Image 1 (cartoon, each protein chain N blue to C red):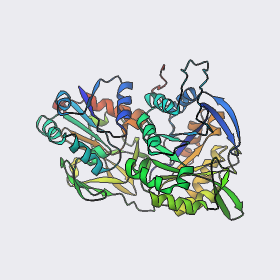
Image 2: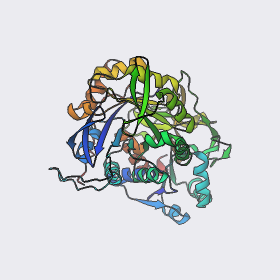
Image 3: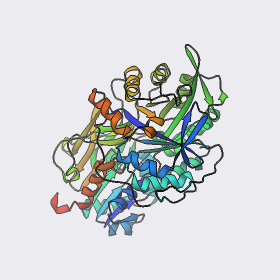
Image 4: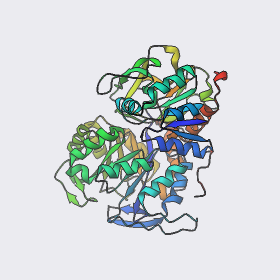
Amino acid sequence: MLGVVNYGSGNYRSVCNALDFLEINYLEITTAEDLAKSSHIILPGVGAFNDCMRRLNQMDLIKNLRLEILKEKKLFLGICVGHQILMSFGTEFEKREGLDWVKGSTEKLIPHDNLPVPHIGWTEVEHRYDSRLFKDIDNGSTFYFVHSYYVKAEDDKAILATAKYGIEFAAAIQLNNIFGVQFHPEKSQENGLRLLKNFSEIKYRDI
Amino acid sequence: MANHRVIPVILLKNGRVVQSKGFKRHQVLGNPSSIVGRFSNWNADELIYLDISRDKNYDLKRDDLNFKNRGSILEIIHDFSKRSFMPLTIGGGIKTLEDVELRLAAGADKVVINTEAFYRPEFVSECAKIFGSQCIVISIDAKKVSPVSWEVFVGFGKEATGVSPEILAKKMESMGAGEILINSIDRDGKAGGFDLELVNNVVTSVSVPVVAMGGAGSPKHFAEVIDYASPSGIAASNIFQYTENAVFEINKHLYDANYKVRKPKIQSITYVGDN
């Protein structure tokens, strides 16, 4: 079954609402046992990198997340900050270790052309290659973004899709069974719902 | 850059949707739940609910669509986010961290703070620290007081402050506001176009996104304000209530004229639930 990690993130409820609408069964993950019961794990996120890591630490979920994702190869989808903490470390407020599943860091968004920060709004997402995550979603479709930091992956091949906001950045990453999206699929109307449905249907053997 | 956002604003007074003119006259239009269903089907970029009730007395009269009576703004947010998967911003009467927390927990993505931010700027930084700047929108209501100057009014546009909107916007940015909503009291409900100078003054004085509001009467006005001030978002209320398919029509008008907006599209998934 699909599980959604609830660590008090603002968009936990929104992700659940979208899954309810899609009639996808899910369980709320707050413990290691819940993680063990899940085949697919969604980590929502709004707010700061450090805050997200701190709360996951407090709930004692990090070790078991590693076990379930890296060893058991369960499917993982990080949203917004849940996507950023996949990196080796974050640089928001202070340097802080992330999950380190994808080599790289988060960087402050400093776009050219005096564009305002945070980047808030609907921006086109360009696919670098075909992935089941974007199945039946047109290349160049818009998704809703709200962020001031972006991920900078060392391995270019981990970048599944990009978006442009003054600079080009990773809108989505994929490393085997691990997915992350900078935008909010739970707030991206039809395309977002489709992406969540796609994720729920991915099997490890298909990757 | 990101596409300009076209944002319908729903004004709520005592649980009913109203039309506003000059911040004074409010005409009742209907039940919030039925009206919201339309916006999500039309692919609005975002939706703002502003609760302008003077007291917090909600009594949602049943309408002929069989929606349940709803007792509070939290229930309205809750209902909305069960069937609309798009960004939702909520404002009106927010004074405490708990007010913010309850709205976000019910399903709002951002909150709009106005009067409290003016009198207690530290409230803005407290909110930004706890919930993140991205969800703190500060709305500023301004009136033109001379050919070249504007003044901020708070308390539903009634209390003069002696402060210029640019100064307040800068201050709010420094306190951690993630976005500024600039509303023209003079233009409210007049449908004669945005106060272009006012919007431009605010856009050029801060580096966070600015949403322009007040005065939209036709798609042309949206184009005008983009040309003049290029705000991140363009918000309006009455035009979306009175014009059929207004979200689509405005988006189409802008898209066809090569403005950077989302490609207009009618939603193919129907979100309106049975409640």
